[in-house]
Length: 414
Image 1 (spheres, rainbow, N blue to C red):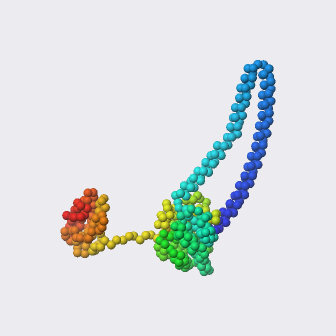
Image 2: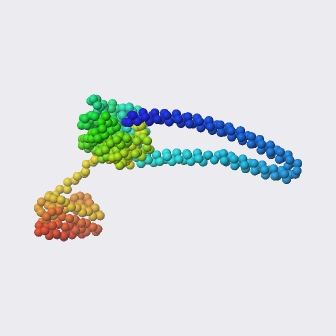
Image 3: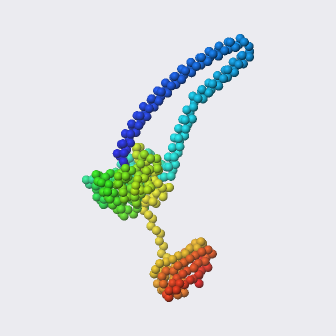
């Protein structure tokens, strides 16, 4: 992904390294010159002081012994002066420590950002087989694999390493994302069908994600690219029953190529920002995946989820709701009430015209039975509160609202 940007950053890195090397050489030369001058000055100063001390010693020794004591005091002053000068010379040390602390803080911030997201990589045939890239990938929780690219002119490209990558990730227990590289000048339906066919052959599981790599316009305008991508994403969602992720980069989105794609999860390429802190272009307000490095042998990403399992749940096929048939012969809406003990009553209008109810007794649902004293019209209403008390309301055939009560969590109604 983003091959052109990888080349651009590579060139910039080379120029930056050269400039840094030149700057380091100049700084070293200036430091050496300054050190030599300081050494020479110190040597001259020491010679003068020693001469002065010798003179004082000769003159004062001829006077009396008290002068010797004064000379000792003078020598102490000289030592203190030297210590002060040495301390002044060492003043830059705290600045260096401050710089190191700032660096440590930046590293800590980056680590904290990574800790809040799930690490992963994205691979294609450029990285080779899993045996070639898994060591470089390091400790990851997920990986995205390029599957297909239907090119202008009809070329049907399939990543030759996709099958090995897909199999390895399953065996390793990693979250998987399959992606297709999109060409807006190619028929959207054909693009989707090609991808779905190859991915189905590899095996698509409920926890797997899918993605459209949208980074070229094939000479089309932003509105055309946006419309094409919208069709591809809608087809992918319909055929594979999960939300497809949109991979793109900031300037591409800012040009309007993704104007109506904000309803899909965003995978943003932003290597200029720290991991987990990408710029989010309109129309999105948040991000799902951040590709933060494309200069190493493998592209590195973080996903905006607390765990790999949460990522799979969000990007994979939604779980079907668990249905349990409670039986009954209800002809309309139902109502329910639950007590703090967990005991629950469900009631509705039965085919025979009476209010019917079933009750969860803590282990199973009891058989449906008529509980109203007269026939009713429409669905009943239920209330429940502490100590097993509750009330049921229903409208009889004469239009009167009837009230029934329970004090045993719906076991009996009066």
